[in-house]
Length: 385
Image (tube, rainbow, N blue to C red; front, top):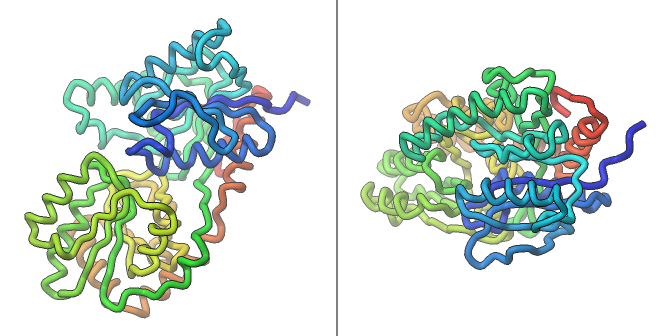
């Protein structure tokens, strides 16, 4: 019997305190905190950002920061090499297993730690790379689709949904090395679960504000439906570098008074706003899972989104806990139907709330721990854990 995992190194381009941190960062840090709570030494290496200390401890996880949007990979690589020599900011980390979060680009921890590396992929970024510019898009997709699968051909993969697992196998990754560890869920503050629904139609978008989330589709839909539903309002919760463009888009559509951009808010405010809403709209082009779907579901708020996003096929049970559509026109049509049919809304919302109870971070952490123990013992695991 092999020795238990005693130390884990997490690599991620952002942490949850980063202004552009989102669901994938929450996933890694919540699981990391529970691993640390169980007695494992956990270190997170991530990017530095204005106002953040170079190192600190949050929820028993030792966080080391260095580098920026792209240089985080370079500085993390140097830190890993230095650590092997007992030097640098990671010198105290002696990881039994390393989780390399591939948000488009991997940290190439395989070069320093070999088969002890688990590659965590929330979703493939083929449709998101063009935003980076022509050269970086071609280079990034080459790394993600060719170089990384070859380099990690003997490593364990973890992803968060069955559609994302299929995307990985489409890149040539052996399905026998792809495990699915789904997102957990923080319980909504009890006080927010008893708030009253809005008396007038109200939809919410819960998302980072970046291009591939396609928040414009939600704004366009509100502009169309407002002619038939004058009291319709849209709450947009979340921040990101695309926010100013979205605000201008709402102004051009003439619906600035019908949209509230809340930005980053605390958990109580977020859940209180969601509780007031009738429908959650997530028009993202690509999702690994869709943590926001389950967060909204706690409040009995069903989600409508695109089938082509991938991960929503897992987090939304189409026709049961929400609705999946194939294009923008269908999004508008089904959103109007959902806003106008209180019985359908209640039926989907009740089932969404019931399903949300199936997810928890302790359950996700236990599943991840099982994967890490298997890798530490020299094995590989596949399927939903």
